[in-house]
Image 1 (cartoon, rainbow, N blue to C red):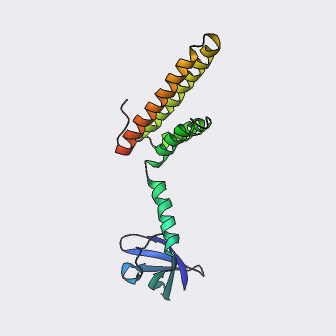
Image 2 (tube, one colour):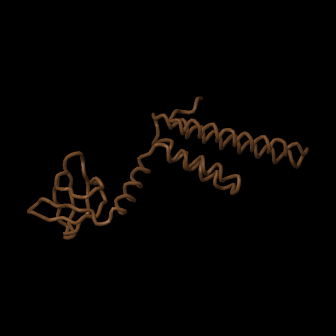
Image 3 (cartoon, one colour):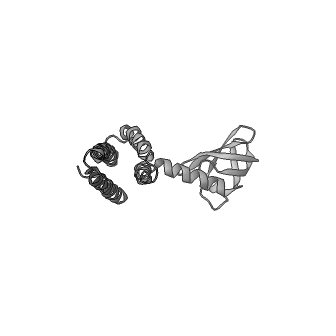
Length: 176
C-alpha cells in the first residue's frame, strides 16, 4: 500500500495510507536508508492499524521537504535574505525597500532572540542610507557636493552590510 509519513519522533511515527487511514509504525518497521521524516512517500504493508515493511518510494521527495523545513527553521535565513536584498539594490534599487519590509515583518517574530539585533540593524541601515541619498541628491543639484555624499553613502552601506553579515555568519548579535 502507498502512503505518506505524517510525522515521526524518536520512537514512533504515523503514515497516512492512500485510502486515508492512518497507521502507526516504529523504527524497526522502517526498511529504507533515509531516516523516517514527514513528507516521505512510502510503500508499506498494513496489518490492522500498523504499518510494517516500510520502504521509501522516492527519497528525493523527502529530501526536498526536509530541506524546506530546515530553511523555515533556520534563524539565519531571513536576515541573510535581507542582506542579499540590500546588496542587490546596487543593481536594482527597489530591492532595498523589499529587504526593509522583510526586516520589519520578521523583527517582531524574532523578539528576544540574538538575531533580532540584525533586523534592527538592517532597518537602521535603510533609514540612514535613505536620508544620505536624499541629502546627497539635493546637494548635487545645488552645489554639486552631493556626488561625494552619495559615494560616501554607497561605501557606508557596503561596509554595514559586510559587518552585519559577518556577525550573522558567526551567529552573534550586532553590537549596538
